[in-house]
Length: 258
Image 1 (tube, rainbow, N blue to C red):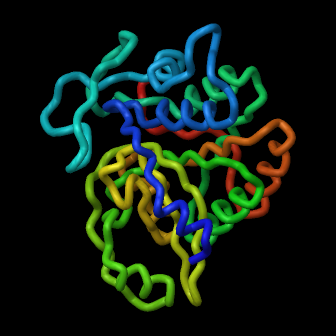
Image 2 (image 1 turned 60 degrees about the vertical axis):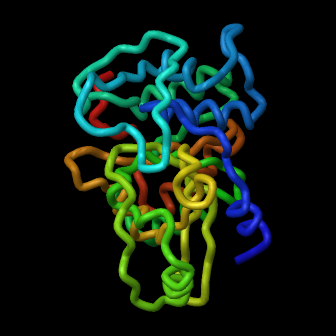
C-alpha cells in the first residue's frame, strides 16, 4: 500500500450527509472541490443540488434511513417532494445534469453503465484516478462487504487467497465515491469513500472489485452505474476509456421517480 493510499485511509470526511441526500452530497462536494461555490447566487451544497436535481424524499416508513452508528439528519433547507420509499431518491440523470449546470458546463458528467465485472471496475478506477477524474457510483450497499473487515481478510484478498466475505452493514440504493485502486501481489481493493463517517475508517472502506461490480449490478430490479466527473478537456478521454473496457455511455434507471 503506497503513501497516497495510507494518507487517504488515515483521513476522514468529517461531514455526514443528510438523510436520503447521498447523490447531492457527492455532487456538491465534487463541485466545491473543483472550485465551484455558488449557483445563481446561492451557495452550492447538498440541499441546493437536491432541489435542482429534484430529489424525492421517502414518505414515512418503517425502519431507518441511515446505517448503524449514524445519526438521522433531516434539517433540509428547501421543501422537497415525497413519494413511497421505493420511488424516492435522486435520479442519476438529473444529478448529472445538475453538476453540469452548476459548473456552467465546465465539468462534464459522463454516465457509464453496462455489464460490470471485476476487471472493468479495476481498470476504470485505476485509469480514472490517473487522469484525475472523479467517480461517483450509484450502488446497492447490500452487495458490498462489511466496512470493517479484519486486516487478515484484507491481506488475504490482496494475496489472492480465498476469504469469507464479511456481511454488508446495510442494504439500500446509495451514491459513493470510488477513489482509488490498491494492488497487492495477486489481488486488489477499491477505496470507497462513503458519506457516512461511521462506516469503515472515517467514511472510507475497502472493497474487492468483484463486490463493487456486484453492487453496481444491484440485482434488485434496478440499475446502477457510475458518473465520471471530468473537465471538458478530459471528456473524450473518459469516453475512450469506457469504450476500451466495454462500458456503455448513457443514463441508467435507479428507480427514482423523476
